[in-house]
Length: 250
Image (tube, rainbow, N blue to C red):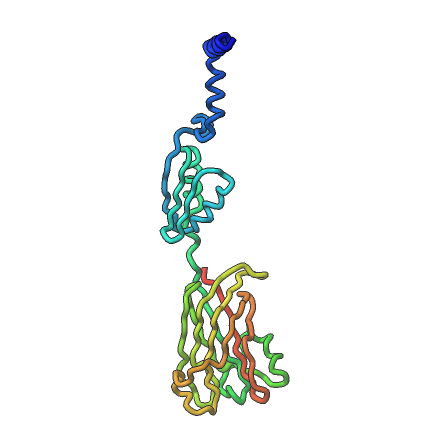
């Protein structure tokens, strides 16, 4: 009986060999069909200069092929069929491109003071006229102003001119960094680590602005390019105010 069964099996295999091939393929799941996988697997590494290689790796997280990303080396390594490797290569070419160059930012710092602190000061410019109400019944004057032009993300500073004995003035201005983003009315400039040193008469020793170690004003401030922002106002009888404007140089 056993010999008859064996003969029947041999006969079936001779007549229908594809049945054995299909069954063998099912029993070896570690060897995928080349037609479905796109051929033999290959390994390829890509230099990723401008974006995080792990971000591109995450883009393909739903796929079952092997990917390794190194932030330190800026390299993305792929192991998979040629079709998938080509997909990754196309993604690297698409996303790994330099971003727009950083903008140049112009910062204007104004010092407003009463006539007692700025007898030779100028009247407020039109863009600052709305801030006069902050001084109540007193009429503010423009005691001093300084301009800094810095690259987005960089620091910068400017030193004031030799102060006049009768006028308050800006002794030194320092900015740690700036960034530019969208605002409600246009560009929004974020200023980080703004520090302002003042000379307020008749304070002795103000002819050398480097003698004062600590700044009079320290702040982080967001500035819409269409507005002026009052960063600080000190004093009651003789108030002074530091106002900042920003412009993005296209």
